Image 1 (cartoon, rainbow, N blue to C red):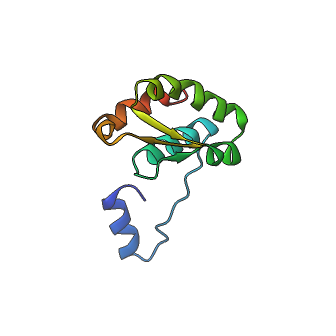
Image 2: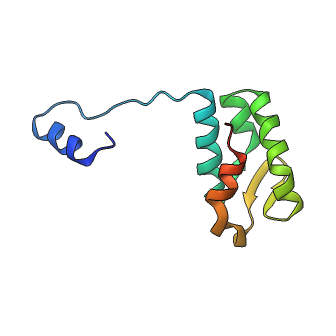
Length: 100
């Protein structure tokens, strides 16, 4: 439960407090990009194509290309990670890579 007050109330009365969130393909893609690029390990392209499909992988590669060319994203094989200095701009870069 994302609301702390609701969570505490549910626990207090012994009611189930776990909910499941169903993400659309676009939401899952955006979540993978955002969380992947926020780590030092980066994002592995096969994760996108396995959880979604190749079209989302192709989309990511096209959108990431300018950041790779500017040296803000480091590509090593199928792994993409932010250059250390680019972590300050992780949210902006991720937003630019989002599928809208």
